[in-house]
Length: 113
Image (cartoon, rainbow, N blue to C red; front, side, top):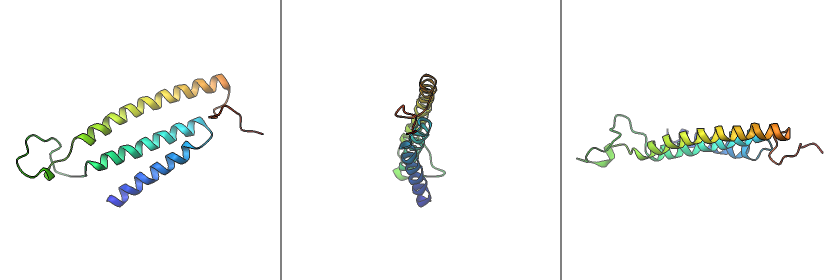
């Protein structure tokens, strides 16, 4: 399971970096979104994948390993909300920039020699 999760994180991060280096603005936005998904999966995997365990530490009566750490889950939930708002803002800026300049290239040039 860890190998599949690590491969998914690596593929998402590599795809995000590849799209981040593309010349069009929409591809850059999708690349940033994929990188944020990879980071969210990484943070979520740090907390450990436990089934049938209490997510909140009421009081530690025995071994701490029997509980699931709630902090990574809260961080990922917050990051998802912030990422959604940031993506929406980027898309509005993309549409405004395309309307003003007539193209969607990152450097503002048309790309034709």
